[in-house]
Image (cartoon, rainbow, N blue to C red; front, side):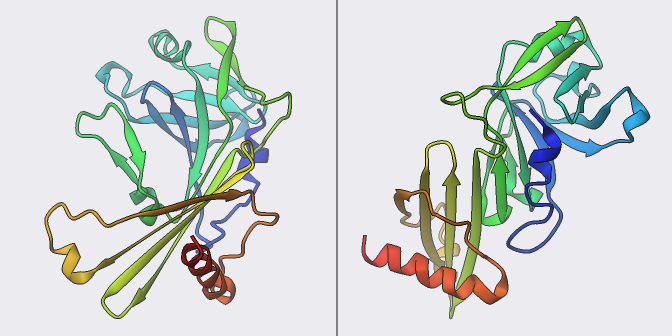
Length: 231
């Protein structure tokens, strides 16, 4: 797994052009945030990941070092014991306000209307080299490698007192595109626990990556509306 290929897929958010933040998520609920470090910090490590969602206080000050080639080192053997038998994946997100933690800090979820843009790698396994070193290895799907598993784009439009929310997911492994839509008025926002009706439609994978810049965004919203109208 080459992390740099993933982070360079697009260096900025394709919707708002803001910088993207890097995370590593473990199936057991742990979430680590990544930061770039000088290559000389420890051999060829280029990223340091530290826990931001963790239900074990003993691990709160631990970290993971990862090089571009996926070579991985850990600060403490307790951390290796916690994650050595679980799968992981990397993701990048535009707006970190889209990451919502559960109250007991044992898991999280992504709220796309706030996140703006999200992309993830395929699932990764840890291949142990020795007690403190291993590699992140991509779990291949039909022997084909994927730098990016999926991308999710979220946009909105306000008409009078109603806000329309749209989201598009492009899954390059399953070859599917999924669109979501819901709307909410200012009055509905004041209703406790109000849940709007959500529309969802699965389509074949789009042949090209949509353009969400301001010049093309209205065209994309019209395209969303057309899909919704004929469904």
